[in-house]
Amino acid sequence: MATVPSVSYSITVRLEVPAGGKAVSQLTHAVESAGGVVTALDVTNAGHETLRIDVTCAARDTDHAQTIVDQLDAVEGVVLHKVSDRTFLMHLGGKIEMQSKVPLRNRDELSMAYTPGVARVSMAIARNPEDARRLTIKRNSVAVVTDGSAVLGLGNIGPAAALPVMEGKAALFKRFAGIDAWPICLDTQDVNEIVQIVRAIAPGFGGINLEDISAPRCFEVERRLRELLDIPVFHDDQHGTAICVLAALTNALRVVGKELDKVRITLAGAGAAGTAVLRLLLAAGARDVVVCDYLGAVHRGRDDLDDSLRWIAEHTNTEGYSGDLRGAVKGADVFIGVSAPGILSGDDIATMAEGAVVFALANPEPEVAPDDAREHAAVVATGRSDYPNQINNVLAFPGVFRGLLDAQASVVTEEMLLAAARALAAVVTDEELGPNYIIPSVFHPDVSATVAAAVRESAGGRARTGMTEA
Image 1 (tube, rainbow, N blue to C red):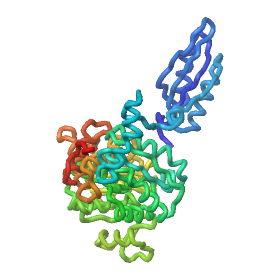
Image 2: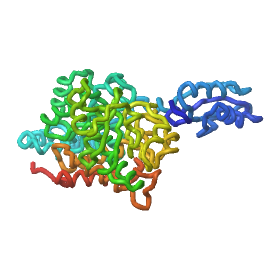
Image 3: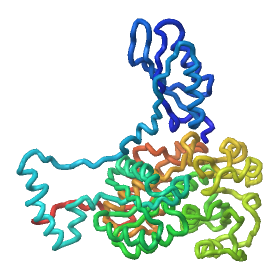
Image 4: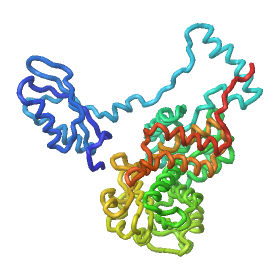
């Protein structure tokens, strides 16, 4: 639940009010007295006796929105007509569409775009399959694949309920990197079936973005697809998160004057995101990390270790700490949470080292209340848009895929991920850097292009253009 009114719970209420008197000002007062925020007030129809007014306001959640509506309805002389949820209206009919890039105005154009002319292009690709990257949408297309098992913070809600999220992901690909992305929501959570389906549809795409597939199955899906396919496979919940966290931490440590290889890091969360963050931190030079899951610290003496947890135990926690998260936080320089809401308090943050860095990234409710953390930590970041230092995967995945597609890469490597993180961190200049600005805005014009260039260079390629002989 949001603690302050948010546009995510924005409503427009259509009302009819008396044309004279104080009715209009009473509407604003009614919303504010209910704790809402009026963002627009439009007169849509005016008469001598009555006015029709659309009041748009932000609420904290759906129950709060209903309270605001009730307050408006209670204003004397007001007639309530209808209430529209602006978020649902935005999603009505879906958020993306397919458009033709070529004109089809006459028979000549139809003959080139489709039969008989298209047969020449098909035969050229049959002779040289690599031409598909230049002569079809493959060169600029990504499949966004989910089984609906771990959607946002909503859990296992299934493929149909996951579709609005995948549509949004596709829209972000287009907005920030000019990439055509296609939502693929699979009605199976069987690893073998997922792998075989994605393998079968891969010829139509230049890359695969795995999304919202629960751990530990996601690890096997990614590993097997990377072995089978000749196009890059990127699991955004893992690698996108890791890139953004490393970039933000790089700059946060600059703020507090510490170095990655000398700080003690406590990481809460040993799932897909946590494991990927850990791996990239270690690759970047981190040496002292303790990882905690819901049972406490991960260490070699635990008898419940699966393959993933065993790898974590073998590469972290060199002193064998076996206590809980609160104990692991004491004296730590950095806390990174990709886990669950409300598992720490401000008092816990107070036990950290001087100049502490706190990344509480559980969304929408962080591991520790940001305001409480800010009382004790030097730098605080969250996954939320209503606090400074929002760590959001959209900072990474559009640029990463732009670079991969431009380089016609076949794999995603650790060096590419490190290059992306370094590039993202470098977008923040020395003049801009500070406790409340360690990561650029998702709307910063240089983010996607800078990350893409770094990935493209790491992949050893540049954008390839040109024509194929008929």
